[in-house]
Image (cartoon, rainbow, N blue to C red):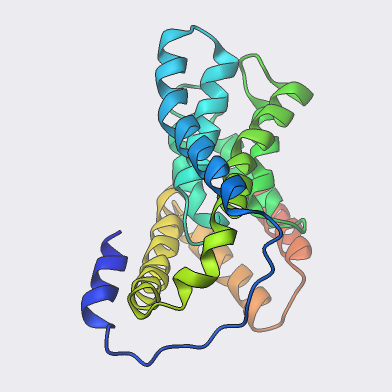
Amino acid sequence: MLGAAVGLVVLRGAPPVEHGTLPHPVSRNAGLVALVLFFALLLGLPLLAAAVPSQGLTVFESFYRAGSLVFGGGHVVLPLLQAAVVPPGWVTNDAFLAGYGAAQAVPGPLFTFAAYLGAVMSTQPNGWAGALLCLVAIFLPSFLLVVGALPFWDALRKRRWAQSALRGVNAAVVGLLLAALYQPVWTVGITSAEDFALAVAAFLLLFMWQTPPWLVVILSAAAGALIANV
């Protein structure tokens, strides 16, 4: 929101950008229903979880909230998920970071990391049921927002004030991604000179030599195990 406000003030003089028309087979009425449902779940689930003593409902609310509030890419969801599952003791911090590392080795959106967290939780529901519950909860907000916003998006993004606000938001996303890299990845994963050297080596493998991510994950895991046993 601060990024959007700065964009409105600082970038309002930027030249407008022409966009093509997006197909939107969804009617405006259906879009309004989806938006109302999105906000009803976002505001109502915490109250329902507080009133009804159900671990499954509490987990669903936590992952739905994480999927609703993230902006700027899948990596920004890491601090939200860590705050949801690690402090209550549902998932250990080591298991959280191990799953995040493994998620980098497979294709697809990072939100699928939620299935891993649901499967390895120490409390019920876990296993396949927990994986499915967390996966549905974290993806549901994005589906509701796409259905809700698409009928109005073409008209909105042609307005100069909306373009200026989105430029500010896109710039702020860079800061969000850096914050997610620092906490929890850097603060927990880099604890010694050996860890730092391994991170630099992995970075060079990815960006200098274009090594496949899955291979970098395997090599980093092997190097980490070697360092731990030395």
